[in-house]
Structures are given as C-alpha cells and as structure tokens.
Amino acid sequence: MSPAASSRWSPTTEQLMILEELYKRGIIAPNASQIQTITAHLSLYGNIERKNVFYWFQNHKARDRQKFKRKLIKQLQLQLQQHLHPPPLPRTLSPFHPASVPQGGLEGTATQMMMNHPWKVEIPESIQMDGVGPLSACSSSIRSLETLELFPITATNHKEECNNNNNKICHQLISNDHFLSL
Amino acid sequence: MSPAASSRWSPTTEQLMILEELYKRGIIAPNASQIQTITAHLSLYGNIERKNVFYWFQNHKARDRQKFKRKLIKQLQLQLQQHLHPPPLPRTLSPFHPASVPQGGLEGTATQMMMNHPWKVEIPESIQMDGVGPLSACSSSIRSLETLELFPITATNHKEECNNNNNKICHQLISNDHFLSL
DNA sequence: GCAAATTAATGATTTATTCAAG
DNA sequence: CTTGAATAAATCATTAATTTGC
Image 1: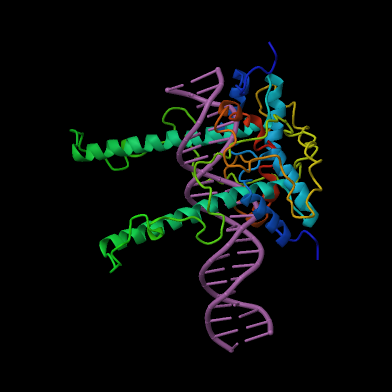
Image 2 (image 1 turned 180 degrees about the vertical axis):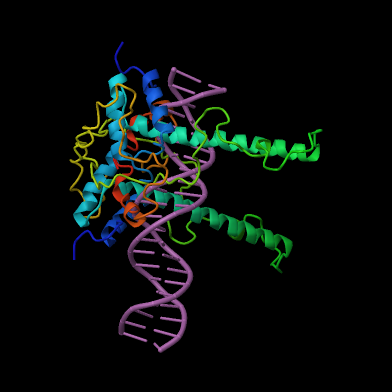
C-alpha cells in the first residue's frame, strides 16, 4: 500500500485530540505562524500539511457555531411552546429559575465563549513568511509537549486581554499575516 | 519616500489593463501556478504580490456577478412593469424580439460567459509549490507579452475543451493545487 | 459476520459579506 | 464610492459510521 493513497487528510486520534485541546484553550483562528507551529508539531503524529490545520480550525469554528445556534433555536422554541401551553408547575418558580435560562456547559462540549470574538488578538509580530518566506521562526516553542502541555503559542487564553487598554494597537496587527501559507 | 509606504496594493494602469484582458479572455479563477506566472509578469510594471493577484480575480469575479445580477433584476422589474402597464406598441412584436431577451453585450463589459463555470479545467501538473515550495515552474512562458499577447497560460479559451472526450481525466487533477501560495 | 446500501461527519472549495484604505 | 483585503457562510465531495439483508 502506498502511504499516500487517500485524497484527503484524515487526522489521527492524537492529532485530533491536540487540535481540540488547542481549540478549547482559545486557539480559534490561528494565524500563519501559529499554523506553522501546530503543523510542525502534529506532523510528529502523522502526515499533515499547513492547509489541513487551517481548514480544520475554520471548519471547527463554523460548525461549533452552528451547533450553538441550533441549540439556542431549540431552546427558544421550547420556551415558546411552554409559553403557549404552560405545563402545571409548582407556583413558586421565578423567571430566574435555571430552567428558563440557557445555562452553559449543557453537554460538556466547548460551547462557551462564543459570539463577540475578542479572538482578534494577534501576536505583535509582523512576520512576513509570505510565499518564498523561509518559514523560520517559531520552532523554539516546539518540543514542549510530551506532558500534554500543548506548546503555549504565546496567545490568548484570558478572554479579555487587549479589549481594555489599547485596542487600537491590538487591532490591525493582523494585516499581511493571515492566509499566505497553506 | 520608502518604496513600501502604502498599506495596500494599488495596481498601476498597465497592471490593471492586463488583468482585465486576462479576465476577459477567460482567466476567471487562476490556480496557483497561473497566479505565479501572472504575478511575475505584472511585477515588471510595479510592485505586486501573489495574493494581490489572487484577491483581484476573486473580487473582480464577484463584483462582475453582482453587476450582472443587478442588471437582470432591473430588467425583470422593467418587464414586470411593462406587463402591468403595457405601453402602446406596434402590434407585430414577437416574444423573441430582442427587447424581451436579456441580450449579452449590454455595455461592452465582460458580462458574457457567466454561470456554468467550465473553468474547472486545470493544467495537468500536480506541482506542489506548497509552503517551502521553490515556486519554480512557469517562468518560461514569461516574456511573451510585449505585443499584448498576454502569455497564454495553457488554459481555457475555447469554452469546451475537455468536457467532451476524457472529462474523467480533466476532473480531479485539481486536488492540491489551489490555494497554497498567497 | 460481511459487504452493499444509506446516512452522518467532516475535509476542502467556492461564494457572499464585511471592513477599511484611498 | 470604489475596491483591496479578510472573514464567514454555504456548498461540494469524500470518507467513516451505521444500517440492512443475507
């Protein structure tokens, strides 16, 4: 069997686990150098290209949102139905009862921190790496996994980081860095 | 003035002319190597990057379609109005009269050959060029302009070329070639 | 058990929308 | 107002789950 018989990448279990862990930790839309690092790391566990990583995050984000929206809709429909046909309830049920609030952690999946993406925060590096770029940089943080520590890619775990003080600086540091690789 | 003082590319007149000519000739969504070639060529007339070429074609295609759609809608509205308030017309007007057909070439713009994109035809080269790729290839066809001949990128001017005989071969040669560069 | 047939997930592209420079 | 750049949504296509009949 040739080792590249498939037309599309399918992640190994380990790769998948790492990707999901990264996502849960806040790497939602990695930039070029992050992608490079992640790819390098995951290639220890099987064939993988940068574009695979890119696509994975893109799709995961989108489908996570879909799931979230669907849940919201379902809940709203339920609420509506209950509004029309109120079931016999114990009298002392305030509108703040957990049953009428879309509480987070509904299933253990990563359906928290959604909408209002303050994930625009980027690493203040206007690295080029574009096209002929030597794709150097970011190879020192590699080799820090091993204990499932998931090589800290510098970025964005505390949901608010830039949005307070100097969001003018944080914004628009993204510029040329985004697509490019693949 | 530093030669890279602007934050975004703005095409020179010559670059724009060439791009539009290419578009009119059927290069609607160039693949990686086409982009490479075009970029190399256009860089003779000013600074330009691959991603500029990519984005230009993407936007041009999209906005051309927008224009087309808007025109169609407008015409349909007109027809509808005329249906409701039929103006005094000469009796002998068949439904095939040009006035009732959205005829092409309404303005000289490239509003023909739209929809039904058989532009999927690609060059049968599964060149990689990905990331570290040496971005070689396709530098031989360069230097054939000069007489506005617009360096024939191998592809797709006669709308039907592959769709007849061996479309199984033509199809699925696309695979890994598309994004990558930028 | 085990393939053929269906369905569900998900990798990869394309298209539409949005943001912001000029 | 136009248009380069970037992101998100929609769509296509292939692979994995799964069902089903034998």
